Image (cartoon, rainbow, N blue to C red; front, top):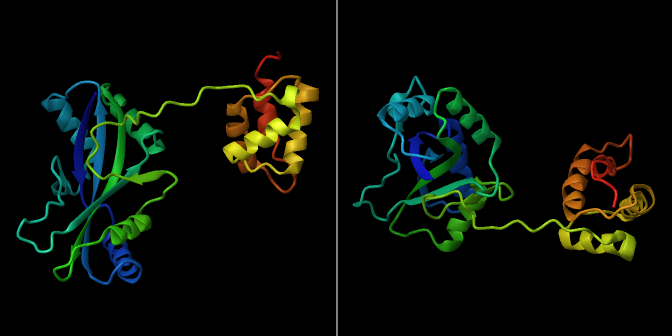
Length: 254
């Protein structure tokens, strides 16, 4: 797999940039004079693109009314003569899941004949120009990063991406011994996985699997279905168990 990088500036509008600068001066340090931004398109391809394919890809990603704001090199390249050197930060989606934005972008690429494109993730890059000779400390850098990304779905990129691989291996699916150990088995997995089940939920699921479904649930069911059912629950039903019940019915009895 090849990972390409294309750039489009700015990532934020003038109004958004000014608002961010005000917040940074208040919450990080008043020594920030200016902020510049750009998007970086991290493009995974199964093979190198020829000249025509690259032109098509650039046409799809560029703003048609601002072609000068799109390039295969970064717009945030500080001059070596600047003292102190400007700080550059990059944040983007976590690597362990593909975003909806990427799915749509890849679908458009495939419709245009670019079948070799398998994933496109868009990151945001920030260049901070500082007042005075001092540089940003580790604490100030961490404080700035906390303001510009969602820690649940995004992460900082200390270096430009070279791959989407994380090296993380998923935990194997296993059965929760509910019929053998009873309600306590669900209590344990609730604690370990942070499911947030209350006593009503624990009683409900224990009865559901032991007496109704008559089999043990999997750890995937406990995590995925419980999360979705809590999102979908309403005050009218007062129950978070519907999603797990629907998923549980799909598996054969043991």
